[in-house]
Image (cartoon, rainbow, N blue to C red; front, side):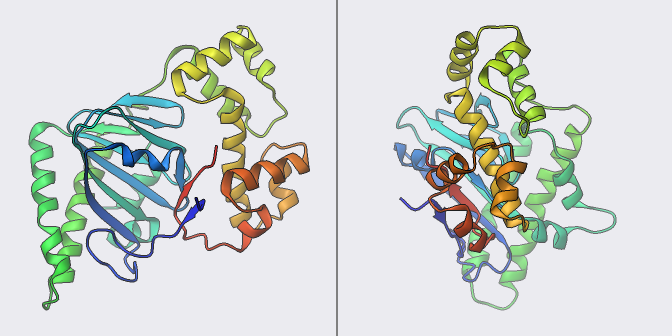
Length: 297
């Protein structure tokens, strides 16, 4: 399977050249096909998932939550995430992928939506029943407008998108100052904090375990049970994602290797190629607007 999936069209509303740098889709599925992405990232786009129904867990950056009606998941660019679908019950959600440029175009001096997204620290927010009903009603206005070719329909469709994003941004602003909404507490939470703070340093699983005052085997088991991923595999993946960001930012392959925390150049090349499906050198030549990437772990 190709690691890079280029999306130049809007799945639902036929924005043929992806000119607005956004995608909105209402997805309903009654099978496990939605798991096909596994662990993945969005290179330059925010993902907003508004949950309607289903038996689903959302995993993001080591944190995991069973979704409930009205939950709003905010995924920042380059954050590792995936879903777990447990049965064939209807999995219904609205997904919005939106770029910085679109958020900037929507923003004004009084209402800076881009700034709200940049400041956001909460991964999962929650709409009340009334807020959810309003959001679904607003979303319902969009498909017919974008599918119409009559004069003004496209502008009206964009206006409804702005209404949706304003409602989400208002909820995000309410959460400002409240910190993380779904903090992973305890041993695994402290481990994730340690990894993020020391990602590019010369650390090992033993170092991480020592910092938590537990044995290496105990920590590895606890981390795997909580997140579904091996501890060292998680560290390597975080480093590779950071290395890719450096490559797209203009760093050389050698600079990306050592600045992201790798000490063995050959190991870096092998791990990067296996994970992203292309070598670091090839990655530098890729279009950074390719926004959804499955990680081959």
